[in-house]
Image (cartoon, rainbow, N blue to C red; front, side, top):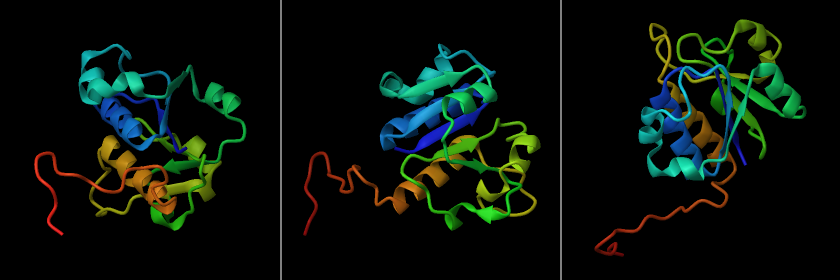
Length: 165
């Protein structure tokens, strides 16, 4: 199972969308406080739709508690400052992929201690960053692709009709 970690997320709609993506992919969500919203906010639930109750989510009071409760975690840190592209690493089955808050990303003090596991999504140089929900989806699906989309439905079905062979 892939673990998605949000360090101090600020926008409830982003976290709701990420929660929905985690439910759809079987990923576990970890939220590190402080959060820029309450977990009971309507925007959070609306973005996660009716899937929020099915979400495997854990909250932590701070980054130190997250590390203490996950001492053997292999953590990839998604940042625009990384030297390595997200497709250049091999994601382990139970790895953690961390994303920082929308306004500032992951603090450089954390990044500096983890240079070899920092990853980035390529983009044009004049663009500061992608939307947090989009970034999570891009990296999470690469990790799942590397693992062969294990346990996921790989074929779609039409609702009223059948595909022509």
